[in-house]
Figure 1: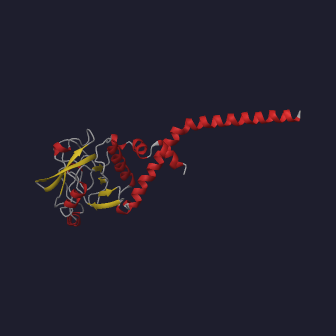
Figure 2: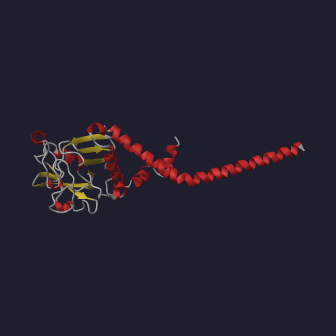
Length: 261
C-alpha cells in the first residue's frame, strides 16, 4: 500500500512539473518578440553611447541626442543601399547652436574618431546668430534641415566645392536646384567672430572657413552622410527610424544572446 501511494505521489509531481514547464515555454514564446525588441533598442543605445564616448564628442560640444539622430540616419541609409559599403564617415551640423560656436563635426564611426570640429555658416534667411527658420524653396536663402549625401567635387564661383543631394522630401530635396553646396567663405572665420560676435551667413549653403575647406571636402566627398539638425517641429524623416536601425545592427537572435550574457 505504501509503495502504491509512493507511485501516485511521483506521478502527480511529474505532471505538475510538466504543466509548469509547458506554461513557462509558452510564456517565453509570447514575450520573446517584445524582449528582443527591447534588447535590440537597449543595445543600440549602448552602441551609440560607446561611439559618442570613444570619439570624445561630449568634450567637443556635440549633443548626444543629435549624434544619435545622425547615426540612426546613417544606418537606415546603409539599409537602403544608398551608401557605399565602406562608407564610415558622417558629418553633423547642429544649427541649434549659435554661429560663433564650432557646430560642424566630422566623425569616422569605424575608427570612433573625431576628424574635425569647425565653424559652419547658415543661410541669411534663417536668422542672425542662430538659425530659427528653414526652407526648401529656391531664393529663400534659408538653410534646409535633414539628411544629405555628399557627391562630386567641382570648381565653382566659390572655388573648390562639393555637391550635396538632399534626401528628405519636402525639406531638402531641392538642394541641387538651389545650388546648396559645401564651399569655403571668408566670412567664416575666427576674426569675424572676434569683430562681430558671430560669423557671416550664406545663401543657404553650409559654408566653412577657406582654411579648412579642402580638408572638409576631402574628408566627406563621395557619398557620405551629411546631417543638418535644427529646431523645427515640422521636420520629420523616414531615416530617423530607430527601431529599424536597432534591428539591423542587433537582429532578434543576436540581441537575445547578448542580453543574456
